[in-house]
Image (cartoon, rainbow, N blue to C red; front, side):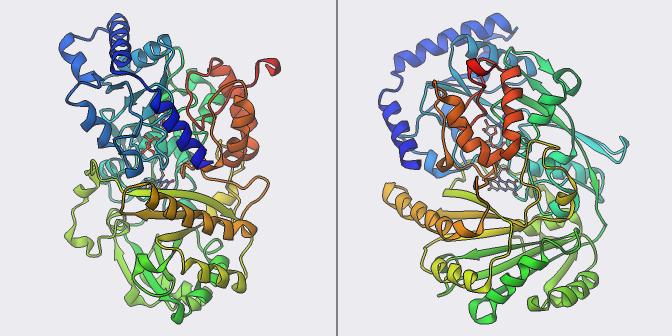
Length: 533
Ligand code: FDA
């Protein structure tokens, strides 16, 4: 499937826009943009960037987070629009629709398969990196924040911390991830077991619809508000901002890491982890990383456990000694700190007293590595012989890893159809991961091949019919859509894997709010076929 997609990219690229076409698109777009906004010529050159602009390439590259899509042959947008105010976003929608082109919406650019800034067809990029206002209000109930979608998670965490050390927000671990894609796709982090998904804390939103109109929760209606919480960005509109409820955390939290080699009974630890991690105190999140030898420079698979406990070290040590003796957790393995410091620790800063929270504001432009990710869900614990076979095989697969994220806790108490994200009642989620240093098709074939091999090994042990995937771990291997005559059928293939039974409601919402399928990408929600409307 991936190869087909690449060929699709390459073939379209060879027929791609001549610079003359690109100039015509720019001229027509600018004419329209000026008609529907009050923008001055001076500002226009910063907001609508043609390929000839000196800002075009730096702007495009600033939020490319996968080096596979940062090459000279990667298809480029005809124009990048970098809006400063809401009316620029409205105009971008209206004018792209008038030109009958595809609009790619990009917030943080972390889409693992680059769908926010790459396409096989002629396309424009709407880059929301200027939309980064965050207003935190601790007096609104238990605390809330309005956050624009071009802000990063790190910026949101930092702005909350500026006002309070005991308020927090349950979202992703990596601070450079953008709010726009992350929240639309579900979002989770190391407090998922205590507080659920990121979308469980979204209480309002503003969105530009396919007609260029702005809505809040009330005027968009509950169906659309449901869809943009887990149904993914890029299918329903441009989300301008989300209003989120904050959570409270203890003044002191505890983090710990336990690394074990195969000789140190790593296998027993992982086996038991499957029983404990999804069922223990919801305030405890224990992630396991299994990686092939090259990543760790050892001869066997290495196992790393990383954990956050929303409480004191003594409590978690006694809890683990009782429930999980195979871990061998000691007080010396634990570090007590504030919640904001725990974020720095998850960023691999060992001595968090030496790092300032301001590091959360860094956007790390142009720092992409070559990578591919896939996901799976596990519903029943693997046996020791099964785990052993996985360990044996993984030891031969260069640079490949599995990240096991426990579910349970809060996730079990929310209905599968409460939001568009359906995979709540699982034991744990796997992120299959491969990251490599060298450019070129040969390296890509080798490492993505390794990743697929681990996925194949896991086939008997993960969810089936369909094999579920997490939308935010974008994976075009599971199906792509060119939105031709067969769009619904193609959309159903990846759509049921990402959304399970919620797919049907997502299609109904999509058909109601965007019947012409303006907001589309290679894995967006399709509309119902005309004969079924
Ligand atoms: P990007 O801008 O690429 O957008 C992703 C998708 O959303 C695209 O389809 C885009 O068109 C659409 N979109 C973006 N903004 C929109 C808007 N304002 N309105 C409508 N549509 C919009 N996930 C997780 O749950 N927990 C985690 O801890 C992590 N950690 C992590 C680390 C790293 C290094 C990466 C690269 C990724 C993750 N992720 C993750 C996955 C991450 O949540 C996912 O890639 C998000 O979609 C990224 O959102 P961005 O806005 O950065 O992406």
